[in-house]
Amino acid sequence: MRFYEDERPFAVQIFGGQPERMRMAAEMAEEVGADILDVNCGCPAPKVVKHGGGSGLLRDLPRLETILKEIKKAITIPLTIKIRAGYSDSTINAVETAKLAEACGVEHIALHGRTKEQGYRGLANWDLVCAIKENVSVPVSGSGDVATIEQALDRFKETGCDGVLIGRGAMQNPWIFRQIEETIAGQDVFQPTLDDKRALLLEYFVMLREDMPELAAIGRMKQLAGQFTRGLQGGALFRTAIYHSHSVTEILDRISEYFETIGAGRQYFGEAGKLMIEAPVLDSCEAAAASI
Ligand SMILES: Cc1cc2nc3c(=O)[nH]c(=O)nc-3n(C[C@H](O)[C@H](O)[C@H](O)COP(=O)(O)O)c2cc1C
Image 1 (cartoon, rainbow, N blue to C red):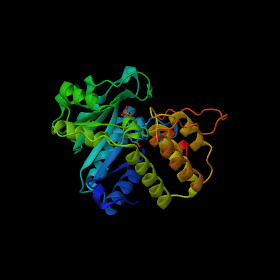
Image 2: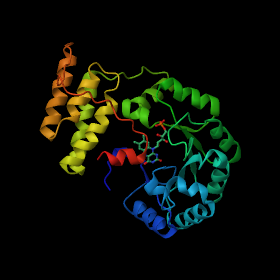
Image 3: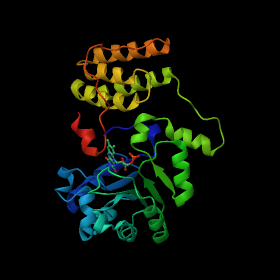
Image 4: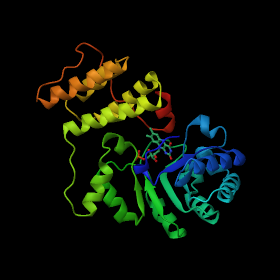
């Protein structure tokens, strides 16, 4: 595991259904320098749930309790948890899960207010964030469907939550966190230029290349470029060009070509004649892994 010092405090999230293995994973995370250990009780991916992990833990609270107690005994860094509303509509148990977690020594609870069975359909239920806040004394954050500064501020105001998590919205606008901070502080809100966007895509690609083989890095790059260019002029054509790239050089050339073209105010035509690729819907940890 690699991280940059300026990323601190950084949390390592683990998932799984076996107490012993979860404890070992937590110990390893602390050993490599994690500041926070988070237990995933939200992932709906079948391959995770099948083994009792992720949102599978929401339908086996005794197992979750054992896991949390085992981990708590083994680590000294703060233990946190990310949960969903419940496993299904008929078994909503976010408040019960949050109370159990607090009793096991969990120091922060994050809720994505959809059920496992709901996946990403419908909207996240933020009323459950209020309900959890009323029942525990540790900080509580909410997650789900926040993609703008206004939405984040509204969720803070409506629920009194301690934090707002942003997933898909941050893949489209990675600057959203500082923009929210600046808005709250009454400062000018940073607006990225095309150069900023290009630089970020390139920096991300360089970092991917340091961490993984070329093919895997290209897969990840396609994923981010797809989300990142939603709404930009010629974005769909750029995505198509990136999707048809097979090498690092090709990707870098496409990025330069795209940003130079739209930066000069010219129309980007990409690869005329190719079937247009829409940005894939990224809606789970599994989706992220599958496209690698
Ligand atoms: C591609 C992708 C990967 C995700 N991976 C994780 C993960 O590893 N752990 C986790 O707790 N949540 C994960 N999530 C869920 C998000 O943290 C978040 O709860 C959910 O996407 C709803 O928030 P959003 O509407 O802001 O995206 C992932 C979501 C997406 C779209």
